Length: 69
View (tube, rainbow, N blue to C red):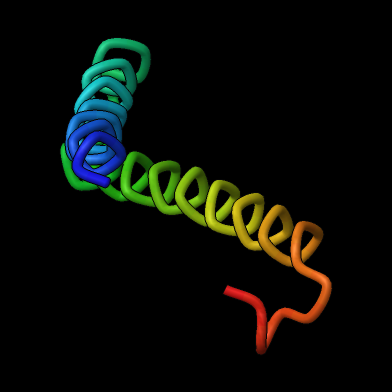
């Protein structure tokens, strides 16, 4: 259980930093706040897609979602 936590602790801040750095390099006219805003939204979108995917996988693997464990 600690391994996914460790990967998530590295993946999402790393994705944010990489996106913010790339946007500052690709769009020098944008302000720092613009780059941070876009990076935050990108990371949130990735988290939402992964959470949706894991929810779908759980629902499809259980015969009765409420009582299965």
